[in-house]
Length: 116
Image (cartoon, rainbow, N blue to C red):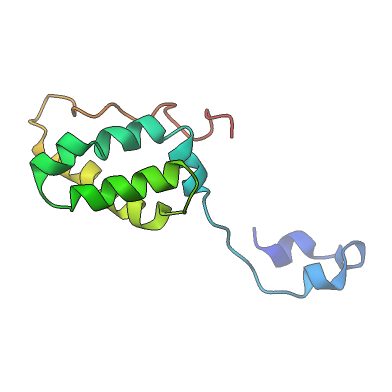
């Protein structure tokens, strides 16, 4: 249902600033998730030995940004997310059929289970 459908007939119940504005999206709190419920998963994918062995990224730079992110010195989540998605994809490509990936799955299994 659209915003208009929800608000139809109830315009008087809401302030005009709420009704007469364009739709807005929202950003997922990836920065917080990487420091919280997704931290172990990310740490496995961003491990120094693994990054060095695979050789796709500058291990020192990725690890520096990861540590700065964890310490909340700086929010590197957008760039780290790209590296994580590549690493997760690479893991899927290099895992033989019928075997599970070396990196454990996200825990909890869904973000709804994570008490955020």
